[in-house]
Image (cartoon, rainbow, N blue to C red; front, side):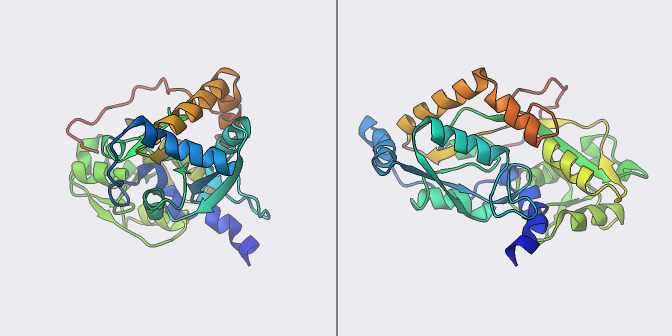
Length: 293
C-alpha cells in the first residue's frame, strides 16, 4: 500500500507549501545557561551513541521524499545529511514527522536535528541553533496563465486570495500585502494549482525551486510562475537544539568541506534539474520591508 502512495506523497502539499516556509513551530526551547558544558553535552551524547537521529518529512520533493516504486527515502537534504553523517563517522537514523512537528521534536529530545528545507529566520534563531546554509533561494508566485491573476507587483495582492498553509512564511508575506489565505488539509499539488487556474484562489507563494519542479510535474494546468516577481531571499540550514554549539561546529566544518570539494553543487544539480542551489542566486531579488519573521 505504501508503494502505491509514494508518488502522491512526493507531490503532497504538506511538503510543497510547508517546510522551508513554516513559521515558528513548537514551543520555546528549554532554558539553557549557554555554558560550554551544556553545548558539549549534545555532541558528546551523539558520539557516545555513534548515531545521529535527524527529523525530516519524507514528503517534500525534491528535498526529502520517496521516489515512485522505492522504499528508500532520498532528496537533496536527505543525501546531504547522509554525507555529513558518513564524514563524521556516525550512523544516521531518520525519523519522519509532519512539518509542524519537526521543531517540537527537537525540543522534546526525540531527535537531534532537523533537515527539511528549513528557512532560517530571526525568530527561530532565538530558539534553535542553525548550521551554515546549504541552500539559497527566494520566493516566487504561481498565477494564472491567462492574466497573471491581475498581479503586476506585490502591492496588487491586496484583496486577492492566496492558497497556502496558515502558519507559513509565504502566507505571512501574502497577508503582509493585504491578501487573504485559503488553507487546505493534506491535499496534492494539483488541487492548489487547479484552484488558481479556476479562480477559486489567485496565487501561490513558495520557494522558486520547489514551485518550478511542481509546475514541471503538472504541465497541463494553465498556471505559471509570475515572470517579473522575485522576492524574499532565503537560506535553508540544519536545525539543532539551542545549546548545541559544538555540534554546529562539527557539522559546519563538514558542510564547508562539501562546498569546497563540489559535493553540494553535485547534489543540487542532481535534484534541482541541473541548478546549483548551494550558491546564492544572481537574480535581482526584492527584500520586503517591514516583514517581521
